[in-house]
Amino acid sequence: MKKRPVVVVTRRLPDVIETRLRELFDTRLNLEDHPLSREELVEAVKIADVLVPTVTDEIDAPVLSQAGPNLKLIANFGTGVDHIDVEAALARGITVTNTPGVLTEDTADMTMALILAVARRIPEGARIIPEGKWAGWSPTWMLGRRITGKRLGIVGMGRIGQALARRAKAFGLSIHYHNRRHVPPKIEAELEATYWESLDQMLARMDIVSINCPHTPATYHLLSARRLKLMKPDSILVNTARGEVVDESALTRLIEAGAIGGAGLDVFEEEPAVNPRLVRLARQGKVVLLPHMGSATHEGRIAMGDKVIVNIKSFIDGHKPPDRVLPSML
Ligand code: 8YV
Image 1 (tube, rainbow, N blue to C red):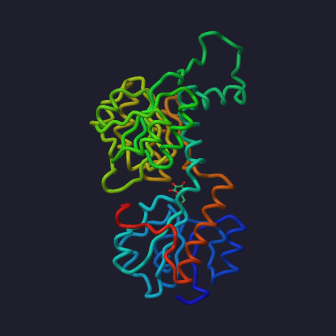
Image 2 (image 1 turned 90 degrees about the horizontal axis):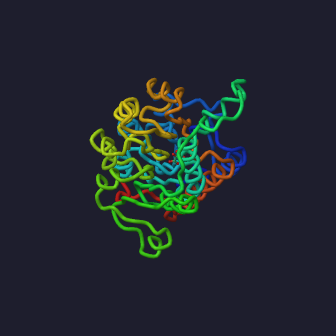
Image 3 (image 1 turned 60 degrees about the horizontal axis):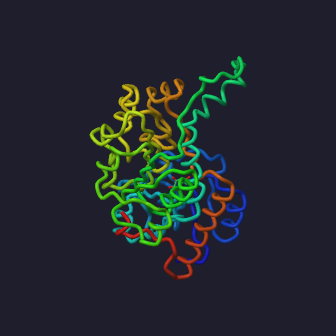
């Protein structure tokens, strides 16, 4: 590939990252930061040597089929790659990279924050004083649920799941997890974590369930209506992974019916659209909804940008980029 490839970046990135990208490559930026339309995305894949997309770009097989012959690398700004048809890209000889590792701690922090927000009713309480509704303290008012001593079931014990487990353990939660395989014995011992081969059995026994697995064909609606019904009536579901892993309508129905206690959601099936019934539940204080901000820190975004640059640099220098997405990961 040429030394100054055309790099098309689909969204605004931190200033320092955009400056560096411009110094190194023939970079085309999206200065207004509008989400690209399908036509604009097709135009981008036609002219780019390297495309730097994000979660807001649906790079499916029909888009890829219109890619120009120069497109050789998709250097995704983000860890999840479920918005990219990676198999179709690989079949066309396009390498795909992502930015793992650098958003682990921030996402785990936000997961813990959502657990506390739902259990201790933080958003509800935080509205009282600004709305001028505080009549004074009362012993039986704004009571939430203690988290210490409760059971946390983590679905997907990768980097983020483990980082969550470390935090949750410090909060006095006991750690349970379901994963394709056991984590190494040393980590299991450190976290005092219990492995559940059966997701169904784990779900039925947890007070809090957190989704921390990627969205792949195998995890689509992993938390199906049938499985959600196994959860305890006072339990809480937290999702900072991908909306598609949970059957959002079934979850909404079960919370409305009092069959699940509440939920903390940072991700949704049809972002940025959110089911109006979920929004109603948020107004009632039964769920806490965040606009996909689990990894949204200045430090994290710069680290993600640095990874994108390293992946592009190593690719054009003729090396294998460090964060290649391989078929075995899908
Ligand atoms: C990112 C995420 O903000 O990296 C991911 O997979 O879900 C987010 O934390 C987003 O994907 C950027 O593309």
